[in-house]
Length: 575
Image 1 (tube, rainbow, N blue to C red):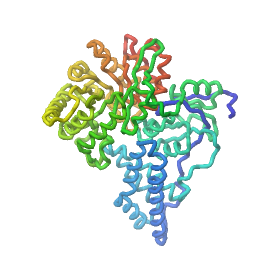
Image 2 (image 1 turned 120 degrees about the vertical axis):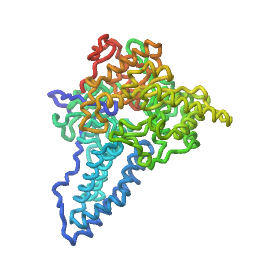
Image 3 (image 1 turned 135 degrees about the horizontal axis):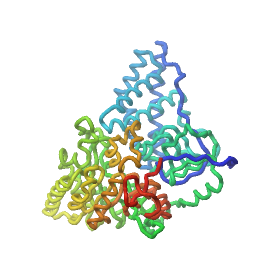
């Protein structure tokens, strides 16, 4: 490939999915439909209704037959996206309203679809319910798919013809369908202007292991199809027209190895710093099928198992036996490696339709996580505790409580735990009577009372996603305020320093870990380690990038965080 003799052009980006990729740009341009007729003649109504039905069926078949068959066996997260999109396609009342627009207002099928979806998405975006706001993303994506089908028919879902060289997708917006297309077509990298690091699409990128950068100011770059790009999603940098020595150096930093039958026999591989200190690495997973990633990426175990996916989209919570069997299979699959099970963390943006209990004007400040269990569903909590205790017999399994505010929350859960253990003992049902209980630090008040919490828990795990959200009062699901979640000005490092120093004073520094998404960021993880954290739970695909980033790092490598006087913490990256 040719390289620009005038040198490279560099721009910073936020790491969405860690790794390094080099390829030629494929600029994904959203379908432009504004020039299409918006109104029709009365005699055209039947044909427009038929076009709508045909397009809707094309999208459904594409999701069911192609997307599920192509992606779901490898990416369990795809099933969530497919389910969300199919729910929209199967909404009879919603599509009846679109048909009515065509029939009574004489709108074209395309205009009727656009108006209906735009109105619905706008309502969801403005909702005080975080779950509804998150679903607006799915509405926009399915709207785009239907409109493509209306214009291009079956050709809408055929991959474009282009050079066989490795490609880097360059897109302004971050949508699940575009990520799935990039993976299907073998894209080696992904670049976007979006900073929605917790969106469905971002989760899919990480699950697929595609190196990806967000927050890239594409309008400042001259990127056209075929331009060579180096996506350095370790250092957080996009290089346009990179010199060959840069490409070779970047590729040499991380070795991507295909999994083999020997993976399970390989011992865990921690991240070793240049000064000899070590950080233990664990996995964040959402589904039992992802347990193999622990072995593939040589992680010590599961540092965070999000149990929310055990609950159906309709809000049906599995009974004790079902939860027990799932957890027991997971414990067996881990073959002795540790497992941390987080109790159901529902509320705000994580609320299946059948479980909506978002009271008040701001669900993110309402009955989330353990609050929901303690104040509304204590029996559901006891059922889950029984399942975990039974599955944890003779195993290294711990319980993690989300959205803990103070020690009183933990004491209340321990009271329920005592009841559960007494019940199991009276029935002669085997259980783990020495199971460890931990709390998530994601509320500032909890972090500021680390000492009190350490009196009642066995360990603490920092959830950086929500901690930053609550520190900045900036909704992590609202793109309009994402800029306020700038790490340098959020106060995150200052409050984490308080947590670490408090634990160190009590001799409990070893009982701290970080399980939020920032632990998977190869740049930010240096700051976390420098603060004193030595246990990190990461997105499995990020493990190699985290190890490589820390390999040349020491606690004395960088200046102190603004506002932290003793130099224990690194300055937040300017991104």
